[in-house]
Image (cartoon, rainbow, N blue to C red):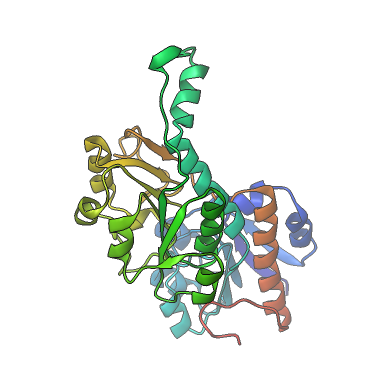
Length: 326
């Protein structure tokens, strides 16, 4: 009997590439949905699948329970696992597969796109010009250089390291904190190790977030922490929207305490029309496209597919997040 797979990630489905041919070559029954799906939407679908090939869908305890006993594995298109109840999947013997190392370059590039868009007033000026509002002379907007400024990086993993390399190329100083700090990388790239998150926040002109979302990091950037930052700090978030308290950030932008917020993620996606950060001053929000390039999608999609193919075949070369496959 062929395997039955629920495919929910829209990036995988919408982008052409070699992963499409690889998927079609499998003798699987593919059921497609347009994620990210809520818990209720997943519950309506779950129950008769051998595997989920998912994006940021809510795979809760209830979803896993309804999927048993048939569900054999969850193959995540991506690396962030905060939408999956990994501990519960582990307790039920369900391997959670993922794709580390496939999108760090493109997310780092996107991070710098946001930074330059803010510091050089690129977005607001381009929109004005498109609307026929060319401003001449002394009324032109005045941006800021990033050369010589301090970039604070919270999370020096694969993406954080790529951001650091690019920051150095722009002539920035780097201060970074990570509980699993890579001292050799820091030495090779002249990065200063901070003793805590607070040290980064206190001494950085730009703060870039590259942390996983968990109970400790949720709302880590809030009114109290923002008050401790430098005036006119720029905050960048290409990790998870819930790392930043939305209302506190909106208030800090309105007051001018935060000079700019660039984010590819929000606490609610898609956001409601009255979301506090939509239309906030000096704020650039993109629609979770930081890892969405033709190159990265193919790497990510092929990796999650190979994880699933190799799992079904019982062969090696599987990237498993919860230790059920060695």
